[in-house]
Length: 313
Ligand SMILES: [Zn+2]
Image 1 (cartoon, rainbow, N blue to C red):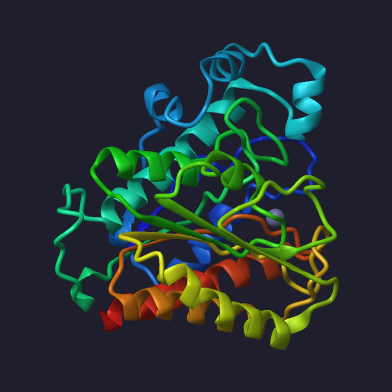
Image 2: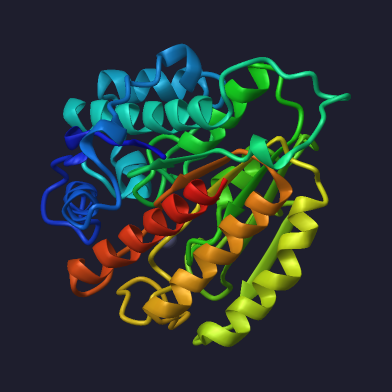
């Protein structure tokens, strides 16, 4: 399985609840445990400004590039502006684009007459990404650019007609839902804690807002009901945002899932996509456990499940 990662995802954002060192730690853990080899790892290129403009407004991109953010913009983004911050997240957005192109084999596909077989299942995992709170003309909630939306737009440019996004971060995928609100080609599914950030949740194709303290069993039950609806869209590529923040000891999440429950969640999503024979792009999204080691273990388990499925394909 190809894994996309850069050590440059260690972005200096000062003292912050968002541990940007988690990316390096997940990468190191996967190498140490033999889940991946260094020869599996691809270093991304930064997303081009033209690719970013497939989703984001020119005004917003100019502000980000030139550091002309207002105090309000910075407060909404919840990250201090620096050119290194912009470069780091532009690189991370490029990582999701790269993972999508690898999973999907880069070729332009015949959309109507494609013959499905399980051999179309290919996984690329990105040790990064899942910046689902970024909107076209502003960033928010630690998300400067919407990497998955940019990658989906790049795939559309390559002729992909139907794309699905499975967002299981504890927070609603507000930016992603907004971006694709009027694009029926992209099915956006978000399952999240209803009474949590963001306050305003633009409607996606399928939104499941869970009660506080939902725990493993009801989460997995709702997931089982939702996945057939996602796959009924007949996607040619699926993006999975495997947020670690539904975890019971997360500082920003309140769904109280266990590590075993989260691994089971990953397995069910990955297996649903594998059984449908569709390319899969895995991104990490959020994770703010009190112990960063828990966040690292949850993300590493996601990649391990993806590798397991990849080996079966
Ligand atoms: Zn989150």
